[in-house]
Amino acid sequence: MAEFRSFLEIDIRVGTIIDVQEFPEARKPAFKLEIDFGHLGNKKSSAQITELYDKDKLVGKQILAVMNVPPRQIGSFMSEVLTLGVPDAKGYVILVAPETNVENGVKLY
Image (cartoon, rainbow, N blue to C red):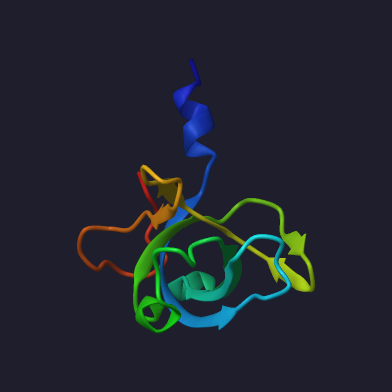
């Protein structure tokens, strides 16, 4: 069992997707996301969500992301946060999101 203290070390925050770009050089189909985390600034993330999401409809969507992971180089793109999702029955990623809009940068407890 994980210690509760270990869970609290993971910094999961709400952000709003403000830009989505194609990512053709990724090994698996993905989008490049720019996400507004309010007082924490804008961060970039790569997300393998092309099967279920249209890039134009993602702008304005709130999501959850892990903020305190090391940046990861994915091809020519530096991913700064880990966008959270869960697989559906086919293995396609469904983004984790708050049920209603909240302030960007709010921490998950």
